[in-house]
Image 1: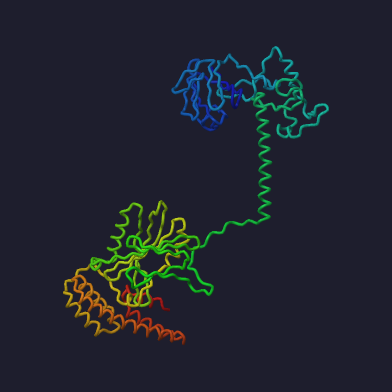
Image 2: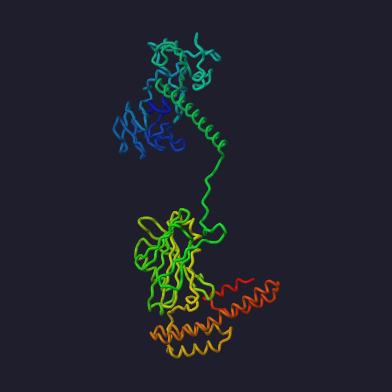
Length: 530
């Protein structure tokens, strides 16, 4: 039978007995280890020990701190002979002895402890080993004799050290002694020393210092918390207030403060919030407006592309080409184009589609919204962007920046398409004139489609005279629509003042039948009427 003794570390002095062919695991886990070691540097399953014919086979289980056998690290299963020592963790040392080779007990152990009872297989000795007898034994017993229960711990002419007694434990505990001679621990001054079953003088002094340090830390924490509580009660608990999203600035009378910038090709203006630091610059065929509002930076970028190819493409193709050109630079990224248009203007309206995008400017991320408008051969893009850090504050405001078209620009708006028109332009223009002159309100939607097809075909053939004639028909049709719709709005307002719900409903139904083109602003406007 082999005995494995914990010479240093926790639990110091414990002995584990192993029979031949018995295998155990040593470690810090109480559930997974057979031999528990309390050193914090030891792994949960640190070491495997197997008794083999009077020796011990030792194998390190990939522990975090490793294992030393007589100062040499274990890298493979190794045979450990009697008298050899294992070092593991921070300061734990295990000694291997035979059954008839008891280890020398530490001299700081309590002399009053008796011999341990016989152990069963795999049991640990939980008490301290029996101290050696011989020279000095009587003197040690005399010097370290424990007073009876209830004895007064005060030495003659000296008051009790209350703080030390609180730190060291119960007065009646059998694990203390009074040092009255110079033994390297108390210097004969009556110091109360804590006696642990596995402690030595150095451990005892360390424990006392640790307990005092913890007491000081507790006092400091109590003082700090008290000060914080008093400050909170004095000045009040004032959590930081989150910034509200930016809104369009107003004057003292409540009117909106606007700034207007005319578009590069004319016919419209971009309306944005008024700012004292607005700066307009022309950069690479773009008009760039920079301004700051309530500490948040904004950039407004307006650009136009006038090209005959736009006559043969629809809005989706134009936007796809724009995205492809931008994303050729890896710093750009764009989301999907909006499914429904936003309308600018007061009459038939200028439909615009938008998407969100992000890119990098001088190593700083910017996010924004880009609007796309089509007008004949012109593709107008309006971008408004802000740094990523302020996007949440500026999102709502960016959605309210808008394009303000002139009346003629809005009135004569048309856009190309990718459909193929086999009919000659001259014939289409003639049909358009007849459709407009003989149209009634309920046939205006069909007449408008005929006129726009004629304009597209004339533009594709490059016949400017026919194109101008077809645009004249479009002007005539939209003038009729505007006059008729204004009259319907006046009648509806009068009925609303009278409270005539029946007339209001009739006007709404009539207007819904006339304006059935979803790319006309009035289609959406009349369907919002109550």
